[in-house]
Length: 111
Length: 112
Image (tube, rainbow over all chains, first blue to last red; front, side, top):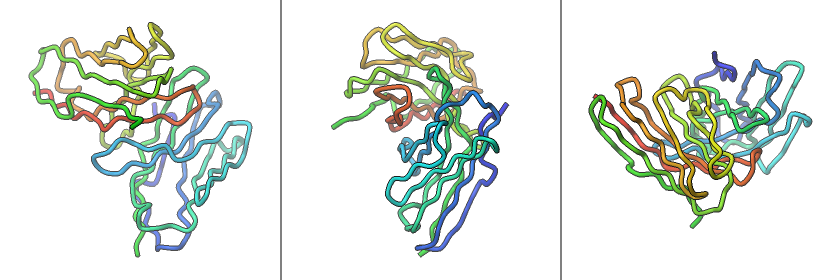
């Protein structure tokens, strides 16, 4: 049972434009959400997170939005750069240490 | 350098031959966990540990064991590997529950 879903396997955007990656979850018991970025042959790298009591968190070019009523979160990257090309995973955390990941979205930023 | 190390990085083995993948972190992190990555499924948590001698099952624990005897080490044990455990495995650590995990470089395991 996939509790965290990333319905777009891939996304292509032009350099300088906005990238929006989406994630849906089914369990309202998740209390924290995180985004990771993964390059080939490397482990995932933490990007940004948000608590379930907030609706927005910003860190430089990266902003995460959380809509609890819709059980939806999104990651905005502005402006997108070619170095942002990677697979992005969203993850959701229960109040123990149980973390569930989505299947990932491959972002390609074209120069 | 702050990091999570895993060994071996690549392993090909046969069904039923016990193996251990080691994981070590040098950041004094409380939390450690193991994940497997399979195409189309993302990362799935196998086991996690909140402190020494405290471990719990994740999403897909069947066929795996772990131990946390020291804070820095969290080995993953496959007592009797099967072909469906062929996967890419990641170990991760974090200082507290809600912090981003630091992942190791991965171990690619093939069971024939």
